[in-house]
Length: 146
Image (cartoon, rainbow, N blue to C red; front, side, top):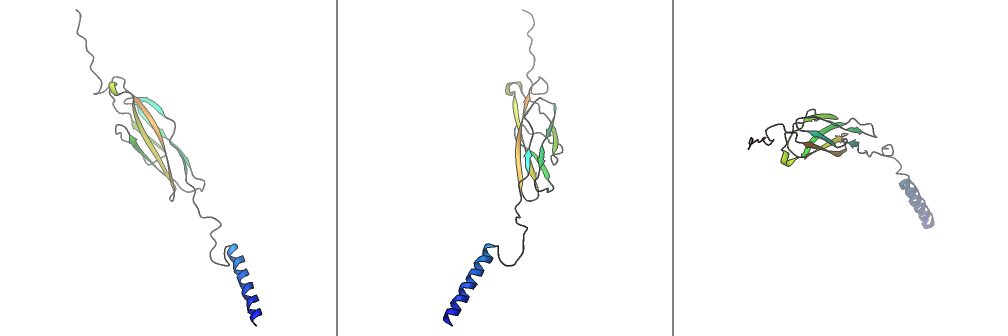
């Protein structure tokens, strides 16, 4: 009887190993993978503009899993501007008034794309030049003739 018990124990142990290697002998099947891939995002190419010029921020994004995406543009560097349509893939703003002594001024914007589970971000730099408009431009001085 002792030999029979050992043989049954060995058979039971072998069966358990086989089931464990195959992922168990029951339970739920998650389809082989429940991981979510990060969406891809590109905030676009750097731009150079003049003060008071309309600037288009146009990114691109995709998701390998086919999840619905949400978008968020935010400014991270530079004189604060108001971003129109900040929650869409294409946004815009008006370049701020910049001073000639500080020109060029670099503004940095971040586009974040979220698929409901994962997110990814990219940045773009917008360089703004003074063209002599606005309140921050130096006055013209002419002392007249000698």
